[in-house]
Image (cartoon, rainbow, N blue to C red; front, side):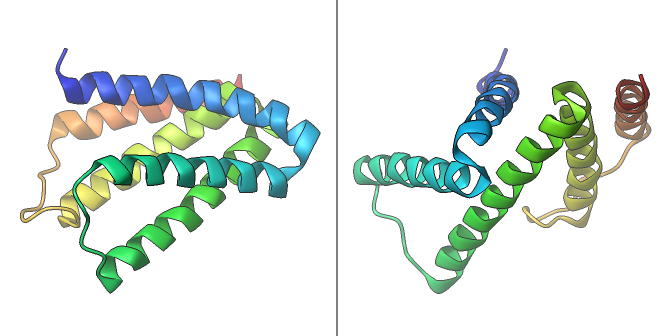
Length: 141
């Protein structure tokens, strides 16, 4: 298993655990405090990482991307926690994963994050169709 596969699988496992931990925290803290404490913890972890890394070039574009990432993270956290509390963890993650795959394929195809657009082959489309089918079965079951 290569490092990229290991990291991706580890992130998937961590997301499942994070949703459970966030659901418990939501009951005790409320959504705003949960997002605030989670965001502050993320900020501290990022700061610690930055202190040991090479000094980044803080361009306006880079800072805007970092701010947008933080806002997206807060939205993602809040949305997943609320959806999991209402629809369950499996249903929520099925929908999140399916939507990530579909939009990831579109983003790759448009070449947003690389010099060349990625191709969309029959196997990729079939794979996403199977995952979407599984997601639909989880949601309807």
